Image (tube, rainbow, N blue to C red):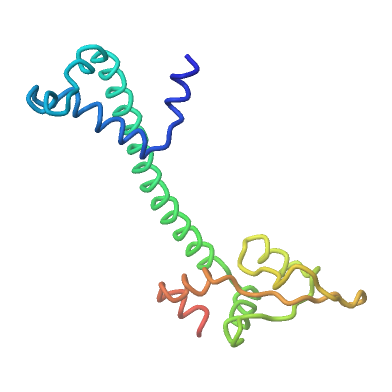
Amino acid sequence: MKEFLDFLKLPTYILGALAIASGILLFAPDSVIQMLYMTEFKAKYGFTLGIVFITSVSILAVLLIKLVYGSISEKHNLKKLKEAQTKFLKKVDGEKVDLINAFIQQPTHTMMLPMHDGLVIELQHYNVISPAGQTHMVSMPNPQITFFLQPWVLERIKENEELQTKFYG
């Protein structure tokens, strides 16, 4: 049983090679098998070759289905994320629009902002802005750090005319 479990853990390229090799031995014409001097081997281990072939092909099929599903799922999730981001930016109003616009106007899309400001904390929570760097020197009476506008915000604004009008005036 342990050998079978180890077989299931083999890398994909080895499973593919086993599937091809066992498939050739099982399905090739007898003349080819005779030229390869594998007639006795096929007669003696034919049942085992069949099990190896079926198992290898089944595992490869499952891995292929998983790969295709993962790819489709990732594209679908990315599309949903972009839609949610655009929807969020359309709902943003007032001071948030002014602050995002101020970030856009900066050449590096960075600004010094108060750390404990509610607006800053909210935009940071929604991943619209993030602190630029890991450690910051701050003045304790007025703690301010540099924040940067996330690239996705600029991408969504460039992709949508309504957002362009909203943020670029």
